[in-house]
Length: 80
Image (cartoon, rainbow, N blue to C red; front, side, top):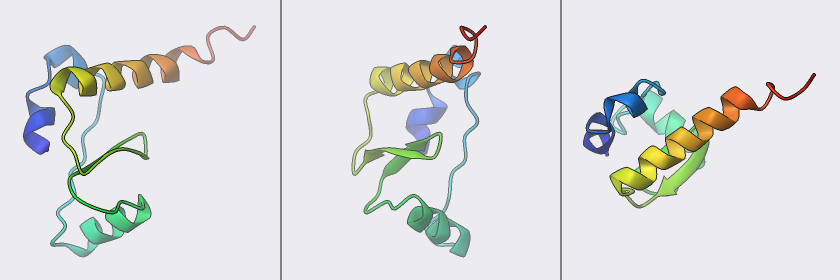
């Protein structure tokens, strides 16, 4: 899964901060439980478990990251 993220286009990588947890560590197991993940691989975006037991296609993952980024960064712009 980490490789799928590392090969995303640079413009997408610039929109995100990546954290990878190793399931062989307490921290990794804790994060897995915190997200309520059920299996690997699992991908969370903005603390939302989005992909479980699957590695999304690169285009799908990029679009989801782009959508969330724009949603986060435009929600407050229209309130005046």
